[in-house]
Length: 198
Image (cartoon, rainbow, N blue to C red):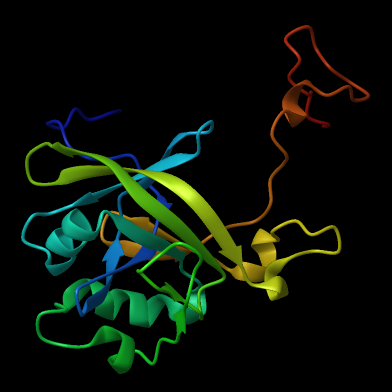
């Protein structure tokens, strides 16, 4: 059996990230559940923000923001940043976040985050409940503690967090590398899908 529901957002899980911004003395960190890669070359990503959010005007005026990946260790602070407003509380101080000063950016990164992604707003598209901020990625800052011996970002060390319809989850086990389904193995059928051993 299957059910038909009315149209809604069901593309889950999604990365749960902290977005930081700053402009003319205002600074904030807030939780974003809708963050996505939109282009590889040039590197671009998007975030969706409600107009009512304190960070909306900061980002619209400064035309920049930082996406900070979130770990299981940071998940409670990330949640706090999503349910409180920067109008009422200094979240950097409350959450004991340390600023990471990034090249060519006014907005700071969060030093406790394993990865800070520096973004410059390219365009803003008004949609409905949210506006879509499409941005150029101008730099990525990574904590050395999360790199493997080859200098590659090691996801297993980071314990990143995913968002699923109002709930947070740790990321699961490694399942395979992109393209593994068509690599030569002992037993492949004509479609290239590896036969499972019985």
